[in-house]
Image 1 (cartoon, rainbow, N blue to C red):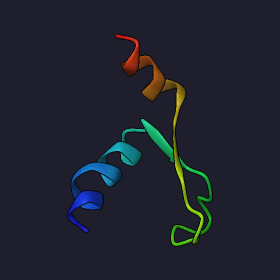
Image 2 (cartoon, rainbow, N blue to C red):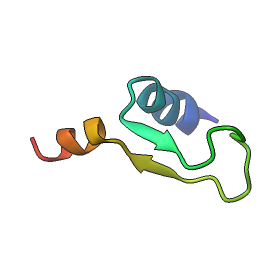
Image 3 (cartoon, rainbow, N blue to C red):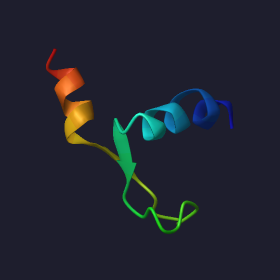
Image 4 (spheres, one colour):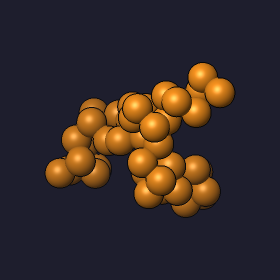
Amino acid sequence: MNFFKNYINPALEANYIAMQYPESPKHPNQKYYLTDLGKSLCTQ
């Protein structure tokens, strides 16, 4: 849970990443992907 609290949730709130299944956060195949904003940070 610390990983989600410290990394995933802040990245989601800042719109750096998005969930593949946003309507079901505990979906067994849940994955995260970079948004355009997140991709722009990687190129800096």
